Image (cartoon, rainbow, N blue to C red):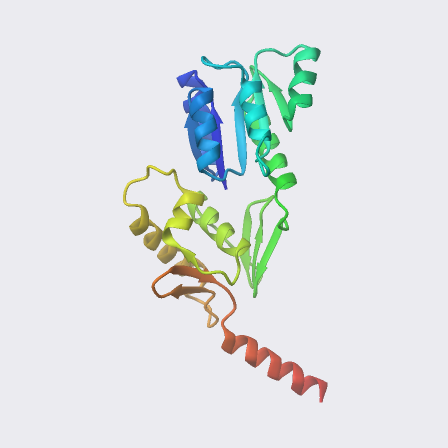
Length: 238
């Protein structure tokens, strides 16, 4: 999932970006309102973390521009202005949540996860064959066995499982899991896919991660296993 952090104080912006990236999210940053608006218009974000006090405009003006789109991401406002009137105005303008500075990162992360769950129509538990991914607890199991994944590995697997049966290009995977300016974009996807396969597929006869020639990768139950399952079910019914 991809998050835009709009914060003009570099120290705070770096702190937020590092923390969110450590939690497994792809993060872009903007230091002013104009840049933030450009980013939202050019990229589909799953969430925007928006500072209220920006150097070129009020954060609420940015919020109004985001809400002017037909489909806009959830917005979490950060502000040192914690008076009741300020919080109410932010929520009435269209913010999904309002967090007052200073704040603990664990609280911000909890609110981020809550907003992403609310704005994500896909289920919180994903299943492909005997592979299960719990998006809330961030746990992966296959055949009942727990599989430990690094944050980027988890991000790739979640994105693929949410798009089960859909071929995903390396560029699509990069845009949803890594920063847009990451060097060696497509090659790093191949490396992480190999890591995932070693953890998820190598010890199992049923290989779920498939290479789609000329496109990229896809996760699904191979047709031959579906056919065998159907035949077995037919035999049991007879």
